[in-house]
Amino acid sequence: MKRFYQRAEAVPADGGHAVALDGRLAKTLGKRNLVVPSAALAAAVAAEWDAQQQEVRRARMPLTRLADATIDRGAAQRDAIVRQVADYAGTDLVCYRAAHPPALAARQQAVWQPLIDWAAGCYDAPLMVTSGVIPAIQPAASLAAFTAAVAAHDDYALTALHAATVACGSLVIALALLEERVDAREAFTASQLDESFQIAAWGEDAEQAERRAALAADIEAVARFMALLRC
Image 1 (cartoon, rainbow, N blue to C red):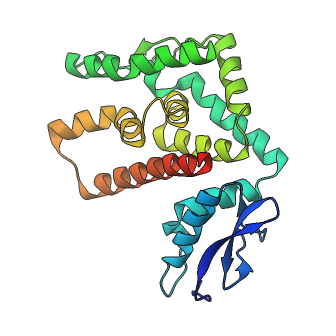
Image 2: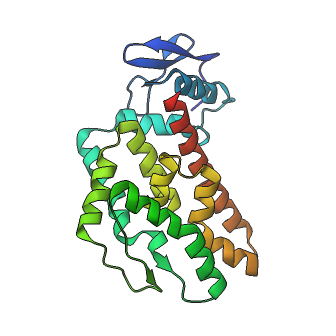
C-alpha cells in the first residue's frame, strides 16, 4: 500500500506501547491495534514504519510481521502452532548425521552434539542420533517434554520460536537461540552446516545465496525481536 502518513512513533497505550502514525494507532493485518509489551520493541517497530518510502512493504518489516502474527493469533491458532513447532523434535535436523565424508560427520558432531546435550539437560529430553536417512524413533517422554517447553512460552516468544524453528529446520537450535545459548550467527551456522559444507566444495549459485541470506535475516530478526522484548 502507499505510504499515507508523515511520522511514525512509539507511544504509551493501554496494555503496553503502541505505534502511532501521525498520532493514530497503527493496525495489524488483522485490524487490531499494534500494541506490544516493550517500549524498546515499539520504538523499533515504529522505526520500520518510518523507514518505508512511497510504498509500505511489510515484507521489509520483520519486527512488524512478528508483532502482527502475535497480536492477531487466536487461542486455536496458538494450540496449532505449539503442535507444529513441537513436532520438529521428532525429526530434528541435529539428530541426523552423515556417514560420509568423515569431515562432515566430525563437524556435525562438534556443532550439533553440544546442542543436543544442552537440550537434554535443560528440558530433561534426551534425543537419539542416527546416521543417514533412517528415522530415529525418539523417546515419548522427550517429545512430551519438548511439547511442554514449547507450550510454556508466552505468545510473543512462541511467535519467535515458531519463526526460528522454521528458519533453522530445528527445534533444538531454535530453543537454543531463544534461551541465548547461541546467537543468531551461530544458529544460522548450525542450521546450514550441511549446505555450507557442500558450498565449500562445489560453490554457491545466486538463487542459493539469496535463499540463505533470507534465512539468516529471519533468524537475526527473531534474535532482535526477543532482545527488544527483554528490554
